[in-house]
Length: 131
Length: 201
Image (cartoon, rainbow over all chains, first blue to last red; front, side):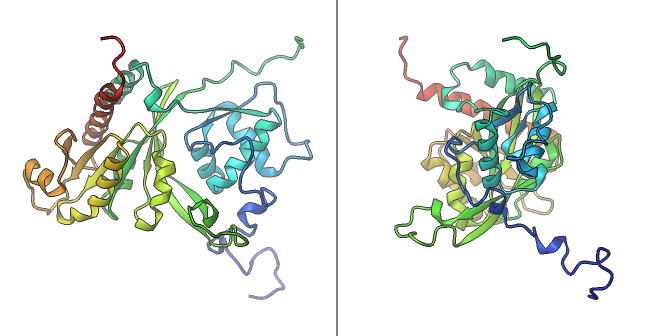
């Protein structure tokens, strides 16, 4: 616990949890006007025209992470949260920001009750069989 | 306006996503079941809960005061490039019931895992899905060393509606879990067919 060898030993470790309070990343916002409670399996897709979001000063590092993560393969909200180790609520707000900026779009899952096309469910069954 | 910018390959496929919930008491094998079929190591996501989202009368001035985190395990099965099934293990503790509502919204169906040694742990989940008419099947996880009971006895003990499928399974076995999931989808199909207004006949 000496203060001399800074950098090599910190007085806290990963077990202590994040140093930044989760909602500091969202500047205190816990909801987003555009999010309409994004489902955990809503898929976030980076817009193809978005090149490198890093120079954009209005974006936080977490915003940039999401844009990068969803560029090659679209990711569900739950996967983004797990991958970036952020609470789902925080991811929702950040994704809402990115959607507003036109950097990503979100495809909402179809509620099964509205799955008029039963063939999707048949495809699920045959897909599971084939695993 | 068409700019001369070259595209980065072709746009990625945006999959249709579906979710199935895996419920049941603590230690009944939910995470094991998810892990048996998921193509990814079960991931864990955390939801930070604030009291503001709960139907309490007076939260004025204390919004976001009491926060707690709940971990949810989930897995992914890519059935086709454009069709992805997610499995979510519901939080086991009863005090997180309200979180289930969010998970259950838009769910295709659910598995209630049961252990014959502690059937009562499954009552709450069965009740939850019955009340919300979310199609579910009961999977009796056949633990080594637990006595085997005929399916009918378990069904009776759980007071299951006869339309609810009950399957014996082994949450560690991929093939067994596949069968359980297929049963959920089949049941969900029958369920929606029943509820759909008959306009044609």
